[in-house]
Amino acid sequence: TDAHTPSLRTPIVAVLGHVDHGKTSLLDKVRGSAVIEGEAGAITQHIGATAVPLEVISEIAGDLVEPDDFDLPGLLFIDTPGHHSFTTLRSRGGALADIAILVVDVNDGFQPQTREALEILQRSETPFIVAANKVDTVPGWNANEDTPIQSTYDQQSERVQGAVDTALYEIIGQLSEAGFSADLYWRVQNFQRNVGVVPVSAMTGEGVPDLLAVMMGLSQRYMKAEMEIDVAGPGVGTVLEVKEEKGFGTTIDTVLYDGTIRADDRLVVGGTNDPIVTDVRALLQPRPLAEIRTESRFERVDEVSAASGIKIAAPDLGDAMAGAPVRVVRDRPVEDVIAEVRAELADIAVDTADEGVVVKADTLGSLEAMADALADAEVPIVRAEVGDVAPRDVSVASTADDANERVILGFNVDVLDDAERRAEIDDVRLFTDDVIYQLIEGYERFVEERER
Ligand code: GTP
Ligand code: MG
Image 1 (cartoon, rainbow, N blue to C red):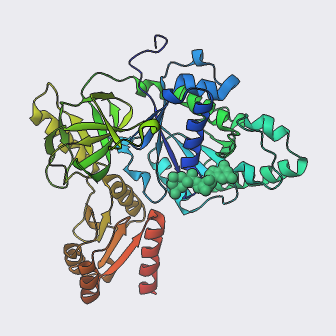
Image 2: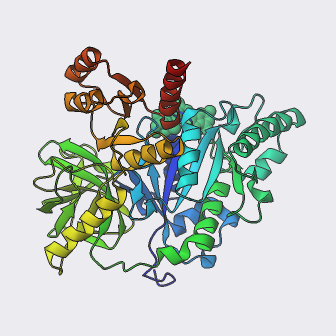
């Protein structure tokens, strides 16, 4: 609309947290509230993401958000399933998300993936707030649907308030142990220095107005300079997932964070070997719920602009890597774009040593995060690659002289049967986990025990 500067793109908000702590429910609640407000059509479902325009945010947030105070077009929320590491959410120069919501179940508190998320937010210097979810499950809680948190809190009994306070201070204490100074969001003055904690319920909608208001304020205040992009330029994005799709072959689910992609564009995509040059066959979005019975789950679109989530069907995507860059060629020499993609891949490339452990990970982003964590732990890496643990990885590991380095560390990957058998014969130790710090701790314990 006219009130918005067209060159500001939608901030990308990653929703992170431990399995079952309520990430998807929170986004469902935002969608549900929009339906109640008669704004269902305004919210668009993207591949892996939900776009919520400013008008809808202000409807849901009521008095807490005055739309005239903002010139950002809204927020694009990316849901990250708990089993799938959000380390894929990378872009040139760091984090793909401009801002994040770390969802923590008030009863469950910090869990392994909560810690993992915190570490990565810290490394990537992504501003975030904590949604202390499921406040409605505190015994004795009386729900006041969709209200701001302070008004519903004031209406609870003293006993319930005490229980809520205890749970919240537990989370604030855990954040402080992790090195973050945190407080309830209404006490936070400087969100760059302190982490705001917003009590919410994805079930009852309590606190959701606050959450949206804080996210909007944070984006507006701290992120605006980075939102000013050339929205009409050739698109730049990151592969979230490489997927087979019936009728389309291999597709890439992509988050576009700059420019546009059109249905007739040529693309360069980061692959396991050389960059892939390919022509878009179809740009696909999920169909609106109302049309769910039609044959295809997807709808073809002609063009998308940042920020958005889009499924791209194109030939030759078999070697595309999750976490890799996607760049639109358009009116430039294709060699230049290939060079850009190569440079970007080189930036992510892990520094390897002559001797060290073998590292495998599911995406480029998680490989990068593993390499950072191993560098901190002063563990050298001889080989680092995206993909499942294969026999050739075992061959590499088996050449190590030091038994501490006859090791493969696999993050979020499978071990192929042949590789498992080979490892046993060659006396190579395999460690796998879906939490980075647990994986490294497991390896460190092994080294300690050997050296004792
Ligand atoms: P993964 O995607 O598996 O990582 O989980 P998630 O974080 O997306 O959690 P999800 O939204 O699927 O919620 C997990 C369970 O918690 C579901 O049964 C939800 O109904 C429930 N739940 C989520 N939020 C709330 C809440 O605020 N209150 C209550 N009572 N239940 C909730
Ligand atoms: Mg989920």
